[in-house]
Length: 440
Image (cartoon, rainbow, N blue to C red; front, side, top):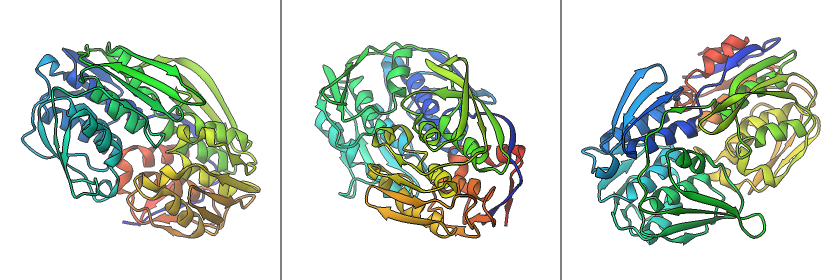
């Protein structure tokens, strides 16, 4: 069903950020294998996270909702995860699929892993390869895509591994397999990626170390044979979701938005750094901490934006925010250049191609490159008026709807259903700020 975002004179108000999706996945997984009962509050109850909750229950954990965003999880402890009696369906979530493959690999179980049409097109060989080296076995179509049958082992071998991609999902998958391996698993990243797995594993009592390697590399080590301990977790607000609200304020004719309770983590703040380089008026105020993460309230106001070359050092820390950064670039004066972002090709969609198509159909000049794109900013509101093909990608859908709040003409998307995978309250929050987004 088509949804359309109409231009409005301002976006203004205060919104509390929804729970972080990455931390929500991990809280369910880690509490599900811990030796006791954990309480989770502020859990993001989007479709992706709910699939993880169902998966952990199918594998033997006792997972119960006790209130809005509040969950109680009793982990399997030393008994370990068991073979599920049904397929494990990850829906649209690459994070859940890749991390859970590592988690399951260290137990003597058999599981059939499936996903939706989009997830079934995404590469899993990047995690299958190291897991096979450790002793897990997989049956698939030969291309390493879902559906996959996983055969785990209680005697995985620890490995030393250097992923070809700078990917937090690959890193996390290997670390979770290493949790139950024999020996110490050592992973070397070409550059640091988001570190929620390391921080939250420590919170659940795991022993692991993180140290600088040569150049910009980072080395993470985890001892095998560890049993996690239960812990009560408060999920911090999601900076990726906050980025859409902040972007809406920055492009608004008279925007003024505050987003409360946002996680501040240097492996996740690339979008806000890039926006600041473009001249965005963004402020932050410390408000406390949750799940080992610093919390801030973000403030943003409308103002002139300048196109910039985005440093490749920021790519890993904003890999999910490039679609909405492209929206800022469309409103900016001058060129915005993105390079070193080839990882976008294997997200929920080919995000480079989807971003380029989103901008072109709305009258914005843009050049597609193998590892990024160049946006020729409109120095103000772009024409708009286009129908954006979302390719089942929630971040393309939300970015297009944000664009429509301040473009010269409305912007439409072909489908909004997948937005619920990561930000079920997106439309309600945008309406609260003054957006005019309608179905049909």
